[in-house]
Length: 174
Image 1 (cartoon, helix red, strand yellow):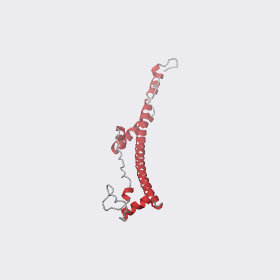
Image 2 (image 1 turned 45 degrees about the vertical axis):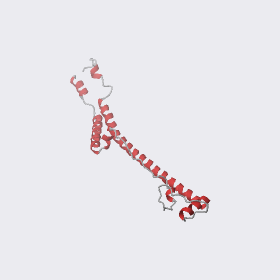
Image 3 (image 1 turned 120 degrees about the vertical axis):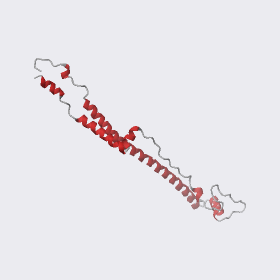
Image 4 (image 1 turned 90 degrees about the vertical axis):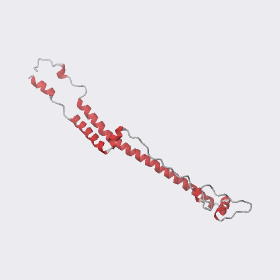
């Protein structure tokens, strides 16, 4: 091309978005998805285990509170508790009172007060979840490798230098 010739639009026009940037963005998005989805799954599992541990702790706190209440009643020499313990533990019923029937769920000869102090058994929930297609691709070992390879290849293609077809066109005219 000589100095007097006006360059045509096709020779000077550059694309608004380089195609390499699209590959780079896609590759970074794929690699970020692998990292973020895996980390999010680990976080969700940790939160679930934490909630279970808090439920167990709450159940044990309730149990301890009931035992402390019983111990406090014994230490304060509560008259109704003393009569109840004498009747159940020592088989001594005060005059003018009738024998108590055993509480439901206890054996007829069981004189222990501890089953009545225990809270209801704790039922821990199980983690139920449905994985999305992206999670399955990223979390399963067989597909995870391929997702990483595809992401790395996209980043590599995005980082390659542009082709030299533009410079060849300007070299031919000289």
